[in-house]
Length: 358
Ligand code: NAI
Ligand code: MG
Image (tube, rainbow, N blue to C red; front, side):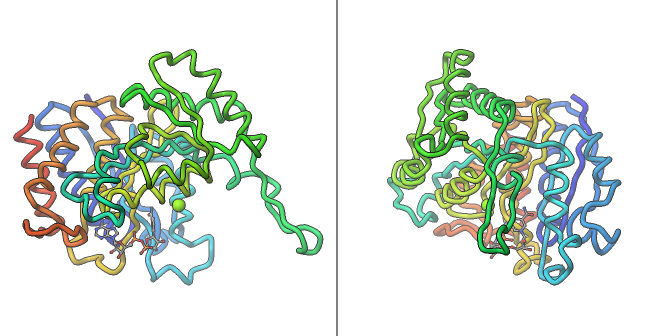
């Protein structure tokens, strides 16, 4: 398989962890006979420094032509005082929008070795392995009007969805469930919101197309509670933009470290942008000690969702588990005993296990 991948290292540890992604991809291409070509472009604060904009046209053009995009992270204190059009995060929102990425997929899986790193009880997080499918380009964050009215004495935000927007994210969620354990939980607030009633209607209609998937509806308040009291009951959760934003941050406490969480933002044709959930970590940037596993797991998501390489993705995920099980970890992970490694060394361990499994 031949694929063209754009790398957007961005800022801070983004520059360091993107190297881990490349090392893993090089290994996969050698072991499985794929050909991946890379093109590195700039985004975020480093793009502001270099090109005077957080999202250069050249970056957008390259990403549009690419089969998939891998992004490190953007931002840092240096740019915090810059005017809003020069803020690094404008680059990130801009590229998601330019590529039309409407589905945000966030798998949350507790690795056994890290169970006690979560603030939740071990017996609660044990066996949790879920995927949140969040709608990313509609809902409250994009509805108009969104403004102050009556001389600032009242305010309105608009939660709007079209049937088409709901259908495409619900399809994505059903398809994701079929690749996992065939369970789908649709989260809404259908007892109050009109938008949620349409959402529920669409899910009910779509059910017939996916007879092997078991569907459940949950109100968002109950879902928030169950997510941290009984997370192992969930397989795939699908929800609108704001509910998904909140629930996915809540779910991240299940895994114990920000340095472990990957994410994918995709559209219908499979093109996607893959990035760790964490930011640029200015406090440790440049030291070579960042945890590369979120970036590596994001790379696995790219292989699975953009290229259909399920087996290779699974091999990478197994290799991460293997490295952790043997006690190797980075400084951010609370692991008793074992061996603390730097970014590059941790990556080498994962690479070694990919080679031994293939
Ligand atoms: P952060 O995720 O960068 O860091 C939070 C804490 O977690 C820090 O102590 C950091 O050292 C640690 N951490 C994060 N990732 C790690 C990793 N892979 N290995 C080891 N430790 C890790 O969030 P923070 O500090 O709120 O934001 C820093 C900058 O990153 C800001 O400019 C923010 O705007 C930006 N940011 C960018 C995101 C993105 O590009 N998607 C997402 C979140 C924040
Ligand atoms: Mg958020």
